[in-house]
Image 1: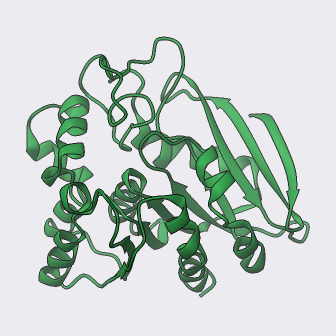
Image 2: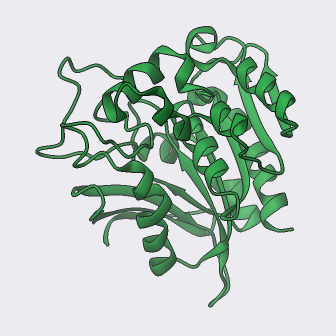
Length: 279
């Protein structure tokens, strides 16, 4: 692991790091905030998965999470959203919603993406092992959250791994890639046209198929331009109600899809995670 930069913040350390990933076959960059702590102390970890076009830097610079993480003693980890670098396949038309910056947290099986686009394994296995080895992280106390495409990632990874995570939340998540244009494009391109294989990457489908978690928190802005066509939180609400899955869905009046929205409610989400990670 190479240190790209470190800055002192709220008594702790905000760092940016990179390493060579054996999973993606590329160099990967991520950020970690470690609050002040006693020598030998292990701290709970909150993962934040970002949305389309983003890198680790978006939430690191605009997420306004450090004060709350310092208050509660939470490590905050922000990975990249896709592999990058020479030889990594991209959308041939350069679209923002597929290819670089749009890994959808899947393991691709379709060429030319299968070699590098293995973000599921990277987030579920490789990066956690690195975090456990290099930081004072208590891997028995982990939460996961995300925004938009990253909200989809947080919900699906959390639902697939209920024994690993103690808290799941999302900002304006893509709740059902099976039922929106972003999902149709990404999952067709990464894992092929057989929609039965998509269900592992769809929060609503996972819940329909039996996945359960103690409770979920979702915030969604009512002025979000992607609300009706891409995000469709009512699908998650209906699915959870039918399955008996606890869901707190908060429709936030006047808020859009931006980091103005995310930063406004970041504190609420970290309080939600802290309550469950400290229990």
